[in-house]
Amino acid sequence: MRKSAAVLSLVLTSFFGAAQGVPAKPSEKVPLCYGPDRWATRVALGHMVDAGLIRDSSSIYRGDTPYSLTTALLDSYKVGVFSGPEFPKSDVYQQIEKFTVKTKEGQLYEVMTITEATFVECSMAHLATVVLTPEFRILQTGKSILKEKK
Image (cartoon, rainbow, N blue to C red; front, side, top):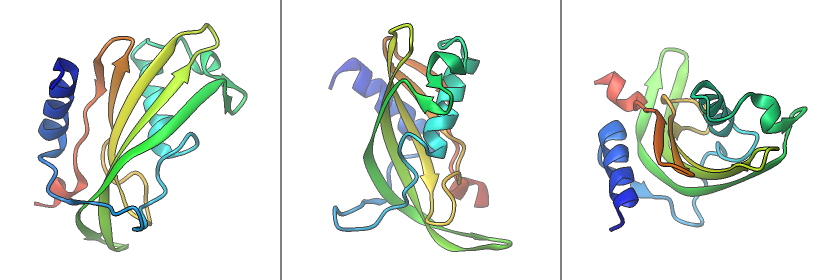
């Protein structure tokens, strides 16, 4: 296992716990909480600005449109069930997304986000944001909504 992959595995298990869910089957529906216009991507870009990696949002956006942004859902695991006051009982999925963004200055970043989502709400957990390139850096740690209930 490469050093960066080992570190990422450690990051995932320390913030969210070992993956105890079952991977989603290709035919199984998963919450549509990934992609360029979704919560996790937008918040992670904000984390990059807050960390000083990106000068400001004008470095990555022309109006509301990113200069160069591609996203991919790497995995989606059902990790449990959540219900709360005024919140329907819902299956919770841990979603791991990778995106690539290029600033107008030409700097390329690869970023991974890890969060929990349901079909009702995309922002169930505190988002973990990890920059993979040009330099491995953890910008924000995550916290499971399911751990808060215990």
